[in-house]
Amino acid sequence: MLKFVSNKGGGQPVDIETAILACYAPDGGLYVPEALPTVTYEQLTQWKHLSYKDLAFEVLSLFIDRSIISAADLVSIIDAAYSTFEKDDVIPISKLSSRSDTYIMEFFYGSTLSFKDVGLAFLVNLVDYFLARKEERLSIIVATTGDTGPAAASYIAGKSTLDAWVLYPKGMITEEQERQMTTLHHRNVHPVGVYNCADGGDDLDLAISSLYDNREFKERVNLSSVNSINWGRIMIQTVHYFYGYLQIADSIGEELSMCVPSGAFGNLCAGGVARMMGLPVKYLIVANNKNDCLHRIFSKGIFSKKPIHETVSSAIDILIPMNFWRYLYFCVDQDATKISNWMEEFATTGRVDFDHETFSSYAHGFLSASVSDEATMETINDLYELESYLLDPHAAVAVTALEQMREVIGHHKVICLATAHPSKFPAVIETALNVDALPSEAKHPSIEAAKCLCQRGYTIDHKHLEGGLLHAISNHWEQSQ
Ligand SMILES: *Cc1c(COP(=O)(O)O)cnc(C)c1O
Image (tube, rainbow, N blue to C red):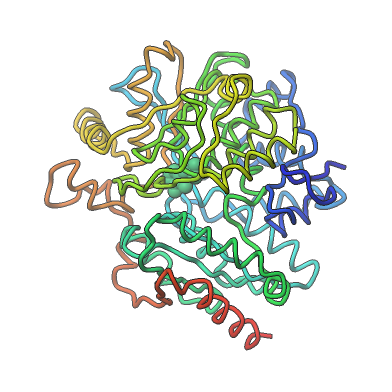
């Protein structure tokens, strides 16, 4: 049976159920499979025409032992997860007409209109399945830069096994995103708007880490998370790389690249893992906005923390791409001591300079770019004028990065990941298109409906976050026992 270990080397190997329910490894590391499963040319050929859901079943079966989840149960978890999506093919792909060899994989047909729905619809159902079987409940904390919060809240709403505390940096996400969390009226969802987050969403992660380190509290309220540290998110996200490749490549082995707007590197970590499993992706392209930690990692070999810039692609205003440590583990022959030392060095000094050998092993097959707001807005406007295709600001970061690197990449097919629906960012769209009234492509019925609903939630100043949460979560837990 495939076991899971911490990328920092501490603790014992655990099964997938334990890894997913715990989220963090006990030594503060990230869970990784002891060995990555591999996929053969023959398997890829057989999978060529599978639907997204059937492919998800095949890929997930490589990680999840049947003794933990039976085939029939896995099928129903996947079915239930994606039954709420607007499109049967879950993440449809379209081809741009005004740019050569450019495809857009659309991740915005889930209930909260972003890429986070694709991961969380599945992960929340999986966690609920495990908990129902064990007759247990969990308190979940997630932090958000705008999209994780709504998705977690939406899929957790009404689940009797889960309570969700959803933290967001007040004023640094759009009103539309905030309303997606605060207009749900389920008693098990608790939005928390946090004032004065100097470092945006990253600030929330720090407060959460100290709560996890409080063992008495953590055990008392059964604390966990479904954030992008959770292995379940990475595992399900490998599926869309397989799906995109198999849908668009004419034959297995064809050169094809993927371009991904990136923040915490959860999405691209999954892409890197899919390639290590045997998917023949040529380049994985890291598209950063002005918060370009990943671009520095992939172009200079430096992992460093810089002050935040507020940008038009706010969901990727992330300073510390935690999932890079998970990917790096596989690039250094699973040497947990190295990872542990680097993570320690970063925690104490805020910077790691990788040696040449490490840099060339992890950067192999990756390209990166940092895209300005101006260029992002121009791309939104261009594509809308040329072919009436409306990108959200994050998809626009990817399409712009691709355009800037097209010469290096060469002429083969590239799939850009469109990670959100434009209706979540109406102010940016209005400015980009230079219009007073939004076109219909920038509207969505669920966003319109949320405008007419009362909002509910907590607010707190960042400096009191840890204590405030401790109090609120403890109280709620006691009352609901
Ligand atoms: C979360 C998110 C991303 C970035 O994904 P990571 O896994 O954090 O790199 C990109 N675009 C949107 C719209 C998102 O919500």
